Length: 302
Ligand code: FJE
Ligand code: FE
Image (cartoon, rainbow, N blue to C red):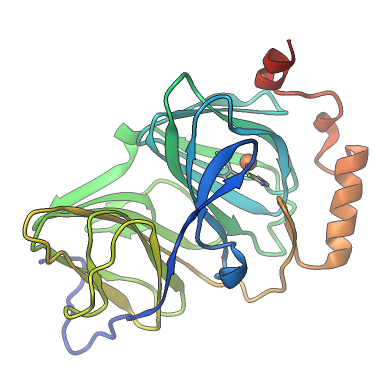
């Protein structure tokens, strides 16, 4: 069994308390996302605001739009996304790559599929505490080859944030967060410790696994599982032939009020009103929004 701790009687395994199937919906300009966290039945899973499994091909995409008050974590599964922001920061996030963007007091950017193929991946929005909402924007970008990895006993893990199976991510997270991408071979079993006070969920990408209890019904792709209390989670791949790939994500809840208007997430309605003014008048972090338009917008308009 792959483990970084032991699931013996001293442990309190987390069980699945709710399951959501993420169905496709339209977002941005003609893009399709399977939204699990952030839809009306699950508006907020402190500190997580949105989890979108996206699929986008040109000319669809997420053209010029702002963010304030949280972080976006983009993890590519297939194809590539071209991004550029109003500070001149730009690049391409390819399959396996990670972009951890702290929007802080303000980012305006575009996120568009690169080339002709379909870009697929995950975007997670992590809330920032009231103390961090207005910090300077920051990017942490990792190519797939630089993402920490560990393997053993039929389990492979890519450590996007936090630590697992002796591998540790270099990403620093303002809101304490663990983000793991597991692949388990048939008949593999794992125990992953999770800090007891954190909220945790799993999201299945491929194959099927039983979460929380060996007898649990296996869960397949596009399902989000909220995990209850405990100090870790046990997962079994009981399939005779098929691997399972899933994300395991956990974060320390902020326990603060949330006021949200689309891509602006603050603590109070008053702060949202101020943010709308800041964006409209291009002040307090949105200075460069005044004249900026992405190259992709300029190209489309000729
Ligand atoms: C959006 C505000 C946004 N899911 N998944 C409002 F910021 C967005 C948005 C995204 C997004 C971008 C990528 Cl690359 C992947 C995403 C939302 O940019 F769609 C709306 N409606
Ligand atoms: Fe964005």
